[in-house]
Length: 150
Image (cartoon, rainbow, N blue to C red):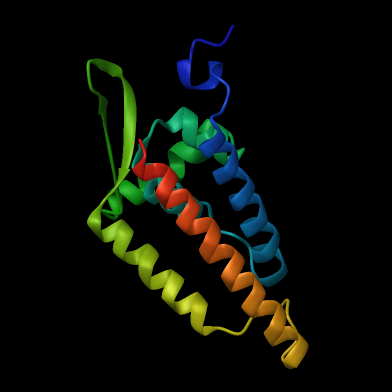
């Protein structure tokens, strides 16, 4: 029997979208370099604000023990904070710190300056890049507008 309420509920549309985006990101990263679990944790915490370790493990499709090791290291370096769940000291809530969000922004900026290993460097590749940028910007606006309605 599963006593973790985070694992028992089915994922929301936002969680499914985040998981799909992470899966796409992982596919892209595997072609470039191994994706880091710490980076993916920070991405999810930036998007959702705070999550339980059980929900993080579920969204990342990793064992809770693996997640616990990485979040402990992130907490030691000041990139996340793990605190007792309000009203229930048995559970934990993980939140990215200002330093964690800053590191994530720096990592993104660095990655944006690197050429894409997937798209050829010619006119057709530029057209594909432009279309992809427009599509992703529209998706981001849609998600922000949707989050603003809550």
